[in-house]
Amino acid sequence: MIESCIRSGIAAGVLLTCLSACDSAPIGTDEPLGTLSMPLVTVVNDIRYRLTEDRFSVSGPVEIDELQHNGDGSIVVATLPEGDYELTLHDGWVLERETDAGFEPIEAALASPNPRPVRIESEQTTTVVWMFQTDGNPVGLQPPGVLQGNLGVADSSNPGTTLVGDVLATEVAHLDALEGIVTIQGSLSIEGGVASVEPLSALTHIDGHLTISGTSLTTLEGLETLAGVSGSLSITNNASLPTCAAVALLARLGFEPSEVSVSGNDDAGVCP
Image 1 (tube, helix red, strand yellow):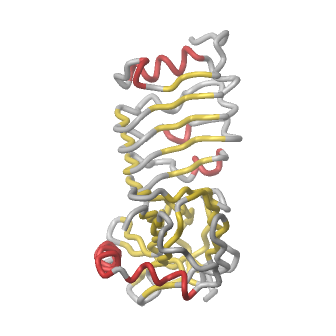
Image 2 (spheres, one colour; image 1 turned 30 degrees about the vertical axis):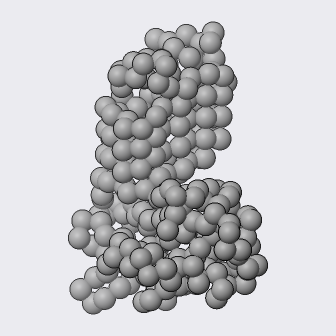
C-alpha cells in the first residue's frame, strides 16, 4: 500500500504541492527537485508496527517546522530542492504494535542518529531507516530524487532478520539495534564514535555500499560472517584500525584494491 501510494503520488505529480502546505519558502520550478517520503508503518514477521504522535522537521536549503502526513497518516511526503538536509524526529512520538485487540503502544527507544543527515539528489532514490528498539511490552500511554525513510523495528519478542533501507550508525548503540540482522537491503555507513562492530556478527549480506569512516575501531571482529557487499566498499580515516585488517576484509569479499577506497587507516597496525 505504501509503495503504491508513493508511485501513484509521483505519477500524478501531486507531491510537488506538499511544501505549499508547510511553513517553507516557495520552490522555484527551475530548481532540481527530489522527494522526501517516509512510511511510518512496517511489518516484521507478519506483525504490524506504526509510528504515531510523530513530528518531523527538516533543516537545510528549505526549512520545514513540521512535515505533513498524507492520506491515513501512514506516510510523510515532501518535495525538496536538491541538497544536504537534517531530519529531526521530535519528542512525543509513540510506537505501536498490532495485537488481536488492535494497535497498542509499546515502550521503545530510537536507535538511529537524531537529527539524521540526508542528501536529496536529483533523479536518484535514497532509502533510509529510522530504527527503533523495543521488547514488545505494552505500556499505558496513548520524480527525481526520492528519499524514502523506512520504519525499522528491533523487537526482542519478535525478532526479524532483514532491514530495508540505508542504515547510519554513529554510536555502538546504533549497531546494537542491528544485532541479529542477517541482510541489509540498502547501504550501511559506520562513522564517528563507533568502537566495535561485534553486534553485526549475524550480518551476511549488504545489498548496497559499506562505508567505515572516522571511527575508533581497532579491529573488524564481528564482520566474519559478512559474505557479500553488492555496492562499493570504503574504509577510510580510521586512525586506530590496522590497514591490513581492511585489506583482509576486501580480499575475503572478493574486491580488487582498485575497486575500493582504503586510506587514512593505521599503516603500522599489526593484524593477528
